[in-house]
Image (cartoon, rainbow, N blue to C red; front, side, top):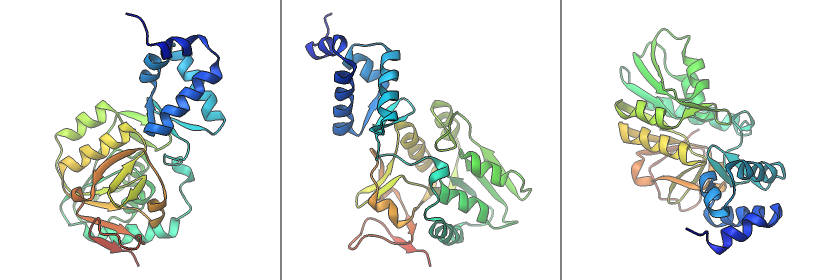
Length: 255
């Protein structure tokens, strides 16, 4: 079976031509899988990895697990997300008021959900499920919390676990309240940075009786390539502000 003309020509032309083709794909789709590029460009996985690495070094894209996204379309590394520390703390303090004693709570991966982990009320008989390594570390010393850490492939940027093992572990769990983080928000819903991240969030939503989205107002000015869910999947948004005219979800503004 012969390759399509575009793939054949790209395989034997210069690296800049391949990289330009990669940038076009990301510009159109927001995300491209490395395996798709191998087929599309007619080159080896090693060549694709080199091209993606070079584009990332130039600040043109961001390499994520399994592929790449636009440079401005994903969450920054976990350690860099500290600009809105006061707002995140206030949002977390408002969010924990919705925790019911004696129930199971799930914490998505994120800096605001980490604040929630730190603020969970003592001696409330809580079971906490999370794939976030910082949240696990924060809760592990607490004898009053039954902690279920969900493993999988570790992502250093998000400091969380993801992938098939994580999805399988979540499948048979039951959660009363999920605190869901977001890379970006808009009038139509919640967005994530990568397919793995989005699938983990969707699985968490599917096992939760109630989903509370937490995120500061800055999330409405950011972009992310993968739509996780619409506002119909969320029971509440806890934030420090929303755009004028926002009607996507019930909103609680943190003081």
